[in-house]
Image (cartoon, rainbow, N blue to C red; front, side, top):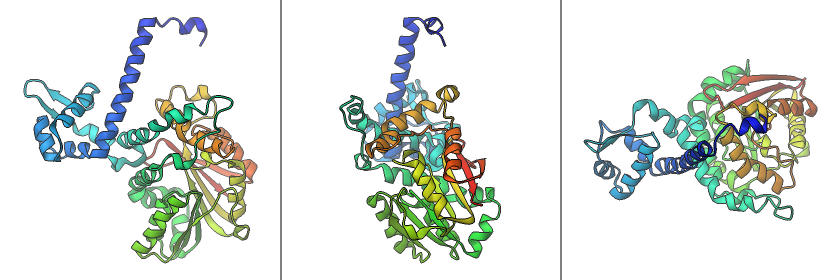
Length: 362
């Protein structure tokens, strides 16, 4: 777009658009509060329109807070309002997008993620000057692993085994017979725990750089009585030397793009996969070139998450800072450079925002 084309928009039109943008930000934060407080769940269970007082009583909350929150939801066109009866209700067709059951596809869950990232915006701003900090450490996001773990559990509890595994020919049968599986950069290890429960004949290892992330699934192993899974603190770019050619199947979910050294991380994965073994890299769907992402309505959110988390944590460690939208073109190129020749790009069932790079080591 030329400068002349850009100026076809009047100052008033741009001003109105920015008012809508800023207003949407407040709607997003209020949506996050609806998830955190459980208000959306209460609205979903109502047997008909209710007043703010009735909703507050049902939720055991203060009416004044509930009423103001509802005002944001009504003016944000999420909750409907009857001005004669002064009652509120949430239409059924909107519930699925707001309740956390949709996992990574839940707008409510994504809004909660934004509310966690917003507090670090000032710290990220301090990184912009040439003499400023490189980036932010993972410790700047104390609730991040818990949030992502909850999101991943909602996504995987039914879809992982029933929908995702069937997209990989023969893998389910191999898991039932017994193979060795590695889940790298696993966070709270939700994927690993689910697979270990379903496939007791296989052995699973989950690794992550953050010790606080690994502590939770380690405790869960004991609680769930699982004997076929272990969790370890490991840097994906510096995995144990004796793990070469050790795993039949390796997977990583939405994590390569924020690695400090993603090139080396992918080479390490290639080293650890057995000859004839498989590697699944699931990452955010998108393109490497900015112009190719401009029509995607999810792009501002993905670039925003990248700016406030994925890019800056990589740069903190002196990394490449690929960012969330590193794109399928660059990702495919890097997988090839790591040694993978057989690469398929597959959809992730029930998750249109993600792309599955299925690789086989010859």
